[in-house]
Image (cartoon, rainbow, N blue to C red; front, side, top):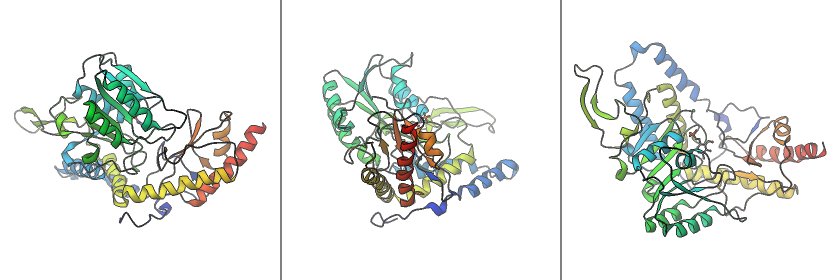
Length: 393
Ligand SMILES: Cc1ncc(COP(=O)(O)O)c(C=O)c1O
C-alpha cells in the first residue's frame, strides 16, 4: 500500500460482531477470517501426510522467514524462527556470553521476557540497573540519561522493549542506538508491540538482537516468533542443538551426522520442531497482511483511533488521564485513574461488550485495523457508565 493513502477500517476481514468493542490487540488479536482457509489447508496436509511433498517444510520455513524479514527490512537469513520472546532473549544471552556481573540496563516493569534473563537466571547473573520513567512519562529521556551515566561503568547491554507494554510509552530506539554506538554496549530489542506498526528497519537500528511474536500486532497465532540476529553474532552457539541448524544431519542419509558445521547465518538459531506448518502458515498469513498495508498506514490509522479516544475522554470530562501524545506509542493508550482503578471496572466494561486490559493499575486500550470510530465512541461512553456504576457501589 502507498504509505500516503489512508488505510480504511478492515473490520470486514474479521469475524467481530458489531456490538463487540474489542480493544485488546496488545494482549492477543483475533485471526482474520481468511486464516480459516490457511488453517484448513494445514489440517488437510497433516491429515494426509503421505501426500506432502518432501520439500514442503523447507519451503514454508523459507516463506515465513522471508516475510518476517521483509517487515523489518532484514536479509532473510538474518532471521530465526523461534517460539517466544523469552526464547529469543535466552538465545541472545547464550550467543553474547557476557561475563557474570556485566552491567545491563532494563526498564522498570518492562515485560518479564527482556528482563528476567538478566536478573534471575542463576547461570547468567548480571548487574542490572532498572530505569524508572519520570512523571512526564518520557522513557527515551530516562533511558538516555541512564546510558550516559552507565557508560562510565562499562555498560555491556541494554535489553528493552521499545514500546512499554504497561503504559504504552514509546522509546526512541534510534536515539538509543546512537547513544550505544558511542558507548559500545549491545542492544537487545523486544519489539513485541512495535513490529508491523512502527518502523523497525534493522538497517537503520542495527540491534544486536531483535525479537517479535506474531500473536498480537501481527495477526498470527501463539507459539510463533522471530529473532533478528546481527551478522556479527551469527557465529555464536544456538540455544538448542538441532538438525536444521547444521549443514548435513539427515535421517534419510546412510550416515546421520554427515557434516556438523553450523549453518553460516541466523538459521542456526531456529527452534526445534519449527515445522509445525499449520501455525507457521498462519503466522505468515498475518505478517503478509500487515506487510502489505505497511507500518506507516497502520500506524496512522491506529493513531487516529487512540487520539479520538483521548479526545473523547477529555470531552466527557472523565476523572482519568492519559500520557501526552509526544511520549506514547501511536497504537496504545493507557488510561490512569488518579484515585486508583476500581477493581470492578474491567468486568463492568465487559458487561458493556468492551474488551480492554487492566495493566499495572491502568486500563490499556489497544485498537487494531478492525476497529473503527464507532468502537472508540462505544468505549468512551461505556467507560463513563462503568465508572459511574463502579464508583457508586
Ligand atoms: C513486551 C512483551 N514482550 C514479550 C511478551 C511475550 O513474551 P513471551 O513470548 O516470552 O511469552 C509480551 C506479552 O504480553 C509482551 O507484552
